[in-house]
Length: 86
Image (cartoon, rainbow, N blue to C red; front, side, top):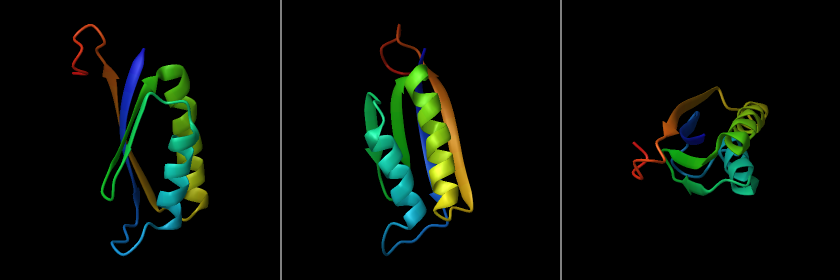
């Protein structure tokens, strides 16, 4: 099974990435995910469930330990047969 996850950490800081956002970014960039897209208002990762799910646990733990007050996740199963991720 393949998963696509969109996530954000809060509180936001428009001047520079807060420590919790940096921690989350480090987790996903070091995981063996197929795709990682980080941005100022949202982030997306994609990969096999066996890789994504442990990375999500690490992301939540690292973000909270670094001061996040909220971590929002949206997890979607990617339809590999359709080829469009819908």
